Image (cartoon, rainbow, N blue to C red; front, side, top):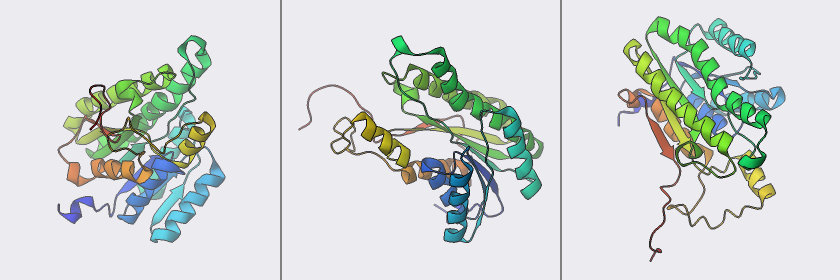
Length: 260
């Protein structure tokens, strides 16, 4: 592959949930490859530490803009700040997401709404606001970060799996409507990824990740491995790829005869 296809020099990217995990790993790659990156999340101190770390590590440009991406006014402010700072937006990574698990029979309406607000509404708001600038320039790349739960479901996560499935369809329709205007939209469905917060949640739940026999590759993934796919989809190397949901999950799980 021509290395120039993965060069983001002169481009501007917004990464939501950019202070930790997959978002931070993605922002790091984009900054290292020449992009000016705006990272957004609710936790201001954590976000500023992440931005400072990325600037010091790469010598590149990374700006922290504290934002609750579920809030319409704050999303408008995030986009306005990015345009004021850089004059354009070339890439949007809708990475903010997550949910607390719980059985369907006891799932409160508040929990259902909260999951959709974080995993779908946030991506809609960011896409709508950033999209106006991309449409005006007839160029742009959007990558939404979904979950393996959005493909195959997960017991105890009816709200989360449904929201992620909705995000995947939102990606498909965005690609269909905006493709003729030069904008690509794709989705990455992450499997069991050992981010800092996920590892802590697994410990609380008593999950033993040392022997992942249900995963063909027999291990959890890393934020960097998901970031690799996100950055590829945002790059010119994926110039003919749009409307796709690509799983980064260690392989398909299925029943059948035991392994040899």
